[in-house]
Length: 236
Length: 187
Image (cartoon, rainbow over all chains, first blue to last red; front, side, top):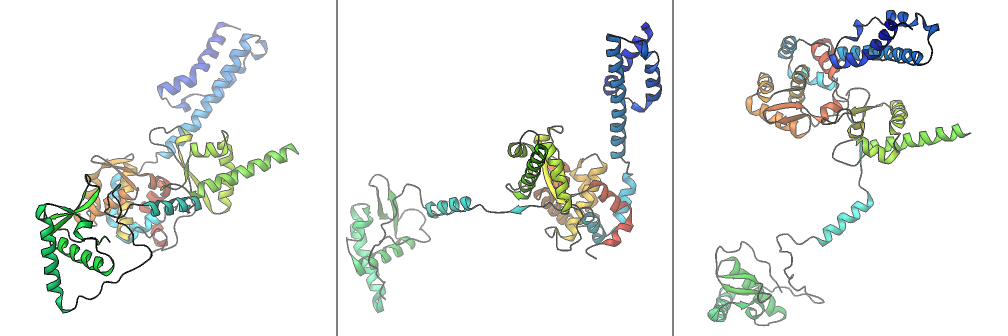
């Protein structure tokens, strides 16, 4: 094969890469002419010349593929005049614009579901959830088991009973904070419920403070400190 | 016989692919290419072609949204099934009020002609021609929250949800050819 024919095949083989790098228009390559020139003297080729020819033909097919890609790219960039679009938007009211969107909106299909294992895990989490506002690691107030007590009406002497309880607690706090149990004087049943109620009333009105003492590992009652609690749970 | 078995396996995988795409496991619909690869194997791209045909038979089409950072990586792309036909039901897509849908149409059309990104100021100024300033900010905030628009500094971009739900060419054609508007499902 003549050297010019070899050169031509080398140049054709390099074409796709040149187009890719240079970003040229693949339609500038005359594919029909290139194939016709490659066919010239084909019968005389042998050995590595046949390989060179096959590579050149493959390169031509790549150029055809690039022409396809180029067309797709150009079509995807259908030019829209921004000024015209702006004018159209100005002329359309909200209803028309919203309709234009709806005409082009394809909703995603999806099924939201909750797996039973997930539901079980959620239930476990909920059960183990620390009470709202409680500190992790703090002992929960002992739960009353077996018997229940109802708080009886104080009658006409509510103020008197509360005053008597105030004085009793004040005497206990003279020598410093005391545990909640000590404040309740170890009472039981209805008496304990009434004492707890009046203690929580004093806490909420800012007369005393109920705090957890990590040293004693117990709740302690002390003289009023800081802002009174807005509400106090009655621990029995 | 062997061919039948292969065909059966392929159909089974295609069904599995459809169920993977339909059952929503995350906050976003559909699933990522790597999830499909895990469920269907390396040749999942071939399975997806059959799944696409099966979806077409029930009025759905497969949309592939490339990942912003790896546009050529099919494993990182998001595969979503969407309705083949646009919305016709007045109640569907009811999470957007009329002025919000109109604002989205304005924002997206501007973003499409500006190559996918524009300043928030520029988009806001066009929406403000239709809505008061306070409402414009509110609506843009909502569209960003819903994923229709993405906010990046002072710029707005087309969000993942718009890439899935909105057909760019259909929207631009709808706006440019006002005739389309006569088929208004809300009218």
